[in-house]
Image (cartoon, rainbow, N blue to C red; front, side):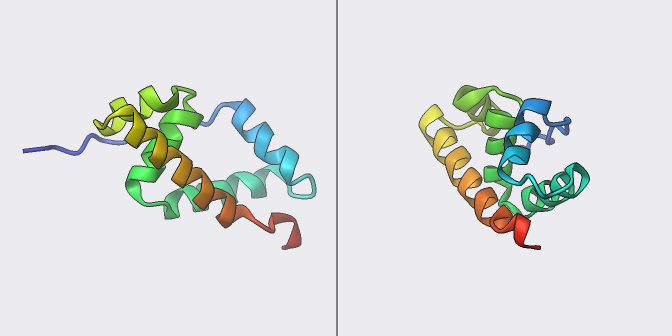
Length: 96
């Protein structure tokens, strides 16, 4: 019987936020963080966990694999898929 691990809620490192801010210079930091939080919440759970572990915690595919209890290739695929979904959700941020 597989038990779901509780998610680890941590603040994203400033470097991750800075990378997103650079792509949306007309958006306030507070609005950007709000939109990023909403977009992350909309991701399927596996993709959200993979993105947060791999990129948010800077643990890469290995960290995502450990978090999700899957192999590295699957974790990397989930993280890439999650990033694409985030990019789509944040597309046109400056147009609002």
